[in-house]
Image (cartoon, rainbow, N blue to C red; front, side, top):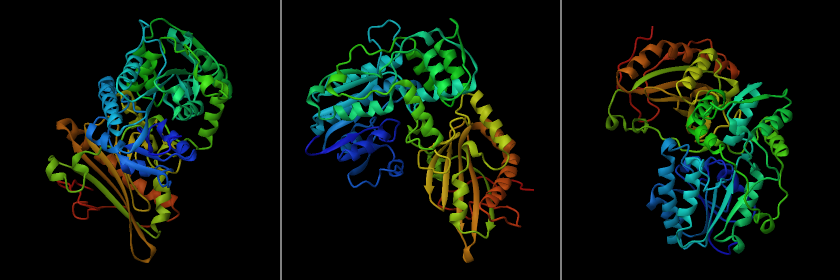
Length: 518
């Protein structure tokens, strides 16, 4: 363990980083956790630990990265641009790795620990995704700071993208038409073993400047993983039919339609499965002895965590809410354009905390309390259009934190008992925000508000808004009444329209003329 200085963790709100930070803190380390959004970092359960420092920075911005890494003696590099940068991930990861190398040198660090991907770099069928993972490792170790590279294949754990693909495919498809790579060998590893190896390498002189393959105790193929998952989930045996014509692109599109993982993420993952991802050496097992978790046990643990609503992190956690400029208080005039609104309110004999519980439980398996068939139709259309749809669900059935994925929304603000703001991530010709507000009134009463704001792009955006406006009115009125009933505060009054330009909750402004509300 380093005697002085903090441990710098990039990607602290991502799938692996979000689980690594609390384990480092439990081991007695002082951690400097970096993210692009301090609000998102502050929502993590470990954010108030006495040995944590939250710092804002972006691996794409060298100056901010250098500031964030100052004073640290070692770093974990757990950043991947596949979600945030989509098709540009290789270019983005290249720049990020160069910036991390420079920031570590300027901070005088003693070690960088990087989690990469398995796969023979000389294999003629190596995917662009795995090639990029290898390139990042090469760029990091081209500097003066010693680098420890851990290379893993499929990570088995609740919430991982690979596990979610497997889970949804097996649960939803009794018969699967699959690519030929379902019989290519791979060596999955449990998330717990990944974390153990990451911590075991920290400050370990024998791992400096070394590259290690890490994997579980078994070499299997995807067909075997399908069989094991079906058994652990108590499902009938699944039939797997490999065909030669199912390309990685077609596989990714099929995964996009059946699972919550979008095609832009599924495609690099499926391309990586087309080559063997098996450990070429096992030196790490002697340096860091562990009890390796087999695939069946890892799946059973992941399923238990999902059923108990104890998923620490999820693949969809990656990324940061990026509200459009016009959504920032006071920026409407600067951003330009016409901001269209639909806003309704209902006054209730209930204190804010009673209304907050049903508000934060919206979405996921619980639905939206009113017009769920319309929400499901919108999610289905979005999925067919290439969007995220409703299948991402939510990490926890009642808790929300900044940056969480919530169906086809992203949580932007969470002000307990006051406000929940969601940014639309569905396919839509414009920028959309759903604002749910609770305003305290006298005598223990509250006013519940639903406000939709939309900045259309071109004529298509205008047609989209005005064609759906009657449905917005119907849904908003119904949702307000349903939320009141769920809170145990039914109201004899009817939801009423209001103009948020006249009664804003902040400096947000709308330049659109009010619509006919009859």
